Image: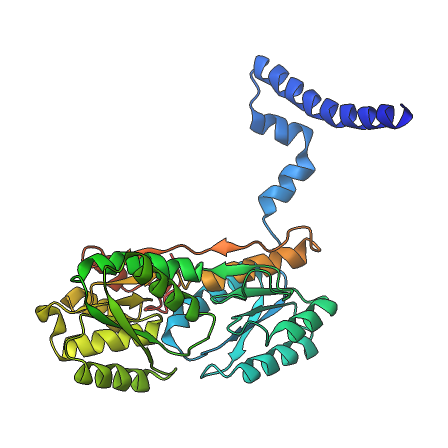
Length: 357
């Protein structure tokens, strides 16, 4: 009984405060005072704190990417810069140029040694980052994933993932291009680095959609490699030896660009060959405008830079009370109908160094 009474007293105390505030606002309304007036009159300190905004803090965050020079991440870097400017933070963009996981892990270890205030990392391997993430966590350094994530159930101690649900995005994209193909057609599916967790789930989604809705469609998977020049060469070689192919479908930005390049070079759209894929390389957008590529899938690269900074900043500022949260950066399709909006000079898609307005 004593415990119940204590619990009830605490609860009433909390509720009573809320009721008291409501009653005060009702009284203020009767007297002709607005809520703003009550806030200013009753709680000037809180009102002042709210009006001053969030404080700028000199936190330094490390972003560890698998392809640091890939143009997909240009708007991501702009997003990082804009968030850092808003919150007073700084960043270091590091990792590997060509998806070498050991280089990425080494970059994480360097960030830990330099006592980073937070780490954002593309978790492109299901296990390789577990030890480094655990070491960062033990050192009090929060880790979030962006662009690529470990599978559900992984022991990796990252706090959140910012990016697309990758398998579902591949599945959904395939459902968009499958109706464009004739029954029993043969297509090429490309992937830059087989097994890499930023693109392998999309490929798996493609294949699952073909199995469930393909109506006799068959496919080959082409390993195009992580280098754009190599990707063009391999997609072109495939087409020249499979000229009856009905579709070329990339799973990443640079191999989608390669599909568009080959489609444009050989005028494949005129013969009914469908090209499509992922990401917003300016070249791919140009191929959509010209009709050589049917569509590409936007995963909002800018947000994949901005949101990790925001999450890590708030986590630090609140001493962990505001924890990083999984953030789906969505899935949108760029087609000939809406491509003009993407072709403008815009920082948010990586084609302008101008400050955001």
